[in-house]
Length: 413
Image (cartoon, rainbow, N blue to C red; front, side):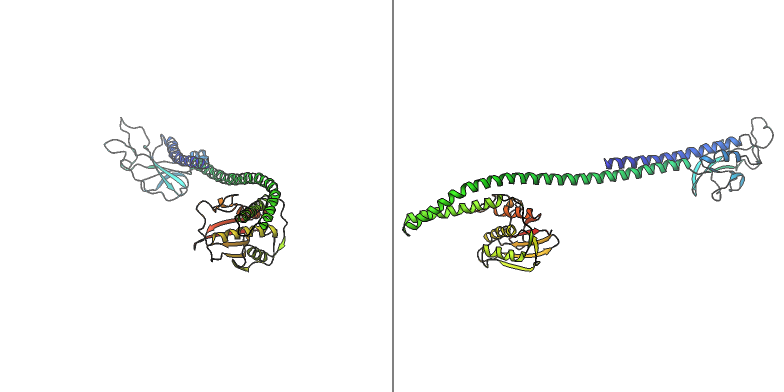
């Protein structure tokens, strides 16, 4: 709409300019004819000030000078003041040529801030003509005098100025429309993102409630099953097949315990307890919990204190570090660092695995999404939940040297 308005206003302005040019020519020819009417029946030589009344009558519409000049530019009679020296106008054919009188079309030229128009006139000496012959002024057979009009295009300028104002106003309105459209587009994109996030949180909330219920219902029977299986394994012979079966039950029960623990961690939605904590100590503790000396930890750029929920952040770091350790080949330690940046406190974890597939940068943080044969797929989802509770972010990208790089950002309060 803004572009259409701008184009329409521009076309209107161009048409107004063209109309102003036509109006100028029409006004010049009108003033020229009015001056001819004043001279109608006048005799040569001209006497007095025949154009003073015409000048006063037409001053409001821009008339500034009326004069009769010879072809050398010398004024024979005039009213008003010319904007510049009057040139000797050219003519195509004199009135006295044998082929008959032919007057060239009026010439409209610029004279400073005025317009100047030339026209031919006929003056006769005193006394009636004889027969059909119309005597001419002395010397006028080959060089008759010229009528000169100078006027300011008041009406045309007013028209052009109004068209320009309309165009400028239209341009401002178009710019405002475009700006409003951009703002509304940005707001709609943001609103869609907010709605998508709210819907995702609603789904996660429902999933978390269901997971919490299942975890609580499974946990007690599972603990009883594991305890009895452990007791049974202790009473069986160490090298017997029944012992191996009982130990398998214990192993699988522990896996189920880990799953229920992850479900409960994911379902936790209570408020976080923000308090000053040592972010470097949290990182070292999380690394030691996952694998002692299994990471290359750098804490040189860490601040001494940062407001955060220490327990939740440690949990998130533990999940990210465990994921990095599982992705890296044996003998290759993932690199972990911490620094204070513009966005806030940033934990960076780089593994040396195959990296992240195209289009999986956000999908890997979805609950129960995993590319491994074992695992719940909740570790990174829990880390994302912790980061969002701190109004932070967690992102992943492939490193140019191979592997994936996770960035956990915790903004300051």
